[in-house]
Length: 114
Length: 113
Image (cartoon, rainbow over all chains, first blue to last red; front, side, top):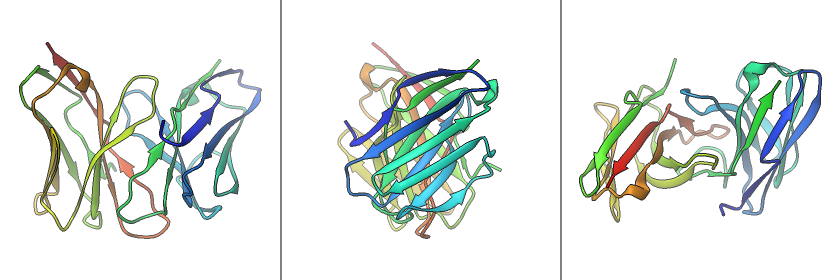
């Protein structure tokens, strides 16, 4: 148990669906992240939030829309995804962005787009 | 362009022997390096880290070595155990606000008994 919880754990959605991934942390951290893990690729950074403000959007297509209502919650809204978007989506938090601190990861949401 | 590279996709080691996982980086601004371990269907878990002011950090069976001039770090696991079988990710960070950990592709370690 890392203190970072992601729901749902598994999600199957059609290309025309709209769904949302949720991440919650109770560690008192101020930085939250979305990463994508595809087979044989590095963990790809998608979005960075620092004190609820988005500080980085790593050239992610607009069909992925993040939302950070407070420092404890992070969402990833999905719409009109493509089959190649199927991957493991990981949320992470850190005490702050940058610096000598580790990130704590949730267990991920395994997304399948059909 | 990948800033953190793990050029060996897999490594097989016998139980009790040493496992050495390697990582190279290109960004000279990185000053903090981490290793994560990941089992299937789980998120990565933090294993060990090292600051750029050090060249070695040890925690039990795990030791990380940093060679800044070569922009290279390695993780040594000794003795290796079957439970160490997992994917190991190298990650790096700068001290700059607003930045995130940058990860390599991972190395799959298999420890046989």
